[in-house]
Image 1 (tube, helix red, strand yellow):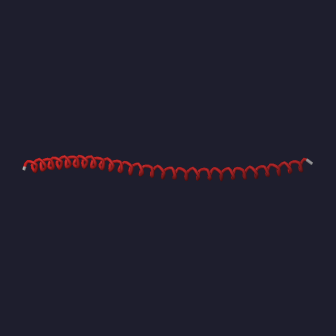
Image 2: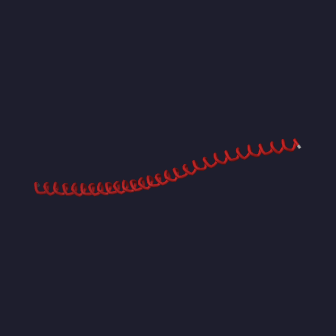
Length: 101
């Protein structure tokens, strides 16, 4: 009868609504998971950028230290050359003075 047909249609519609609600609930859970994942990735990215900044800062300090060491080496090399020349000159003078005696 028409009543049974309407009752049957009503049950089908209710089942479809229940299924749709389940799908919406699943979709909401997926969206929440995606948002949580996105937030986690953004936090990791922030930490990586922070670490990168620290490493770059340390690298600059080390490069400055290296430059200072290069200058020290250059100064010491110059002092060594000067001392060798001075010693060579003194040795020559001593040799010349000794041979003149």
